[in-house]
Image 1 (cartoon, rainbow, N blue to C red):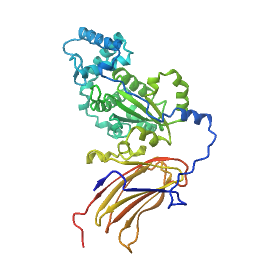
Image 2: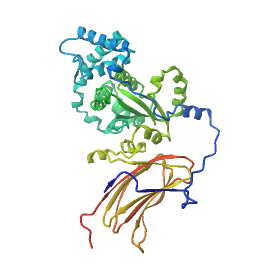
Image 3: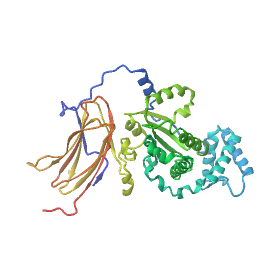
Image 4: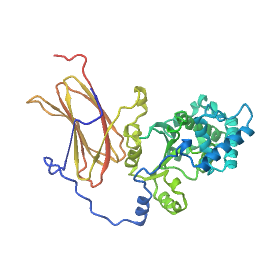
Length: 426
């Protein structure tokens, strides 16, 4: 039996478990100026609408610019060039239009500027070897895989998601090993481009399809001064050669001063640019990511259920999402477990800081409830719990999260699978 939805979920206040009531509202507190700024810069609802790549949706001036770019590219191009990501740019098909429109939008549909950018990008890809970089051996960066920059799952709309976290480089030894000299920096940039190309390989380049990725950047412990050179080179390289490839940029674990700076500069940004940015301070990471990405696709360190080993077992199993209100206890009851069956579950609450327990309740009269996991306080930074239990008799598993000591509402998710025993002993 494999299920991703609850059979029964009971919510109750600790003092009145037999009569669920709405949780008490926290008293309003005076907010500091900095807190107000940080909340103002947190995007609470998805507002970004991705650009259309249907030529029928273009304005007359945009259609004209697209045709002009094709004509100028045809006149300037040699017979051997003009392909990108395996797509001939002069083939006249819709995939080529998607790529050309990305360069046009990056330069506000100014044809000459777009052509110049495109030609420079084609030249860079040839010189850099970008078209064959996925075949490159970067075994020296094995320790960075799944830590510094990596593709992991998709958002709710199907965009591939790339995670970036440079906090490990606060370790001076690690920093020197990766960025110690110019040659090391060049190798890192090549590895970083390979990661991005893995994401682009998953794009459709088709009107109505998935034509961009999501970037999630973790700013926790990021050494600003030390990474300035590397960061500038990465940013410049991506801006110049991968236009309009990012649908949304989500910044998490954002320090207060970053939020203040964003508040100061945001009035000068276009609404289109601002709609792509999502700012989440530390403590709101899971709540923010859940709005855009399903929990089974979010890494465990960010309040999700995704672990690197999951990929060995095929696509991630869907999770059920729920919320735990302040002053509330939630019991998740998984019924119908047969004797000899093994139940395996994952459960997580964003920013835990509450009590969790698991118990097995047998159906038979006179049987005793088994404390599978005794009640314990889960720290705020703990990752998702993964556990299993083999029952000797039929019954139900009850997973409990007790948030009665807090006033904060928290997002949460769980999933489970029950495997029947091949042979049930007498």
